[in-house]
Length: 388
Image (cartoon, rainbow, N blue to C red; front, side):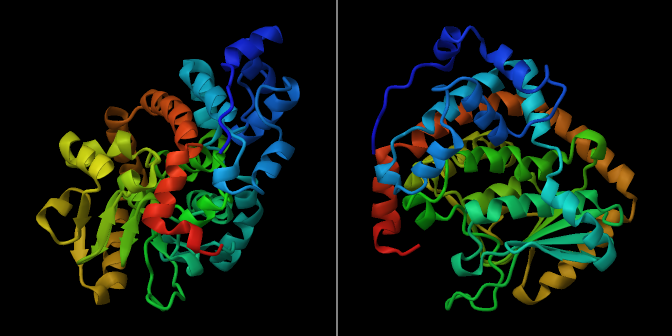
């Protein structure tokens, strides 16, 4: 993996007669127009050549295995970190990523008419007053990758946009893996095989956590601003990114014996916003044990009560989901959403998240392009022996 010297964004921009804030203002009409972070970076590449890679350069980088990448994506992380570090531009970018996607808007009428939308890697089905979102990546045990990301975010948007839906349910789709055929694993985290083979761009991490994951936590912004409560139906396991999702859910239902853990140490990357959120649930010491030393939780064990609300048997999942939907909607959507928002103000105000994502953007870029990540994937995942 090439390690290229990267000038700080401020230095490159100074040579072009700009500052980070001035560039952002130019690309967003002084923070009056929402621009998604990936579009923003590619617009910046055209405005200031050499600042960040162009779309064509990233597409070329995607053809290389992780070990062979040239490191051009590092500049994206460094620029994003600077934008997010500035309160005004950072807040605008965070809020811009909370606008519904065009894919969701294109399918909203279909959901309202038919009660279901199948986007491929994500499916939404209206179930009474709930919208059930299934993440569907059956070959890879519902792992997340570049193929699932856009459709999962659109599915979250659809649940939030449909006025007939009062609460969301997030669960894994049925898989066809020989060991788990017919089962619904909640999720296997990031697709490590795709990561090793260079199929997952650096921006995957930022688009995911500032996109659909933050929408689960904060709802939508803009003219369609709304938020709803979310239930997680955790079956089989919740690994990595799937475990991260439990940190933004309002009620976690888990089958007894399910393992929930963050294999961040073995992977060599930052586990999304878990460094920010997990300590609120389990305490700082247990969070450090999980992120730095691989501590796991098992649904049904006393210590797992801090991250799991309800433990059930495998044959009780559907009834438990229906019962929780009724419990959360019986007092009305406005009351539930108001209490949710009020709790979030104290727990994780937007500026706290913005500042965290500034650090995350920079540090995750270095992790993503580190030779240590390649070694970890080979040692702990045997990624070099797996086919895409």
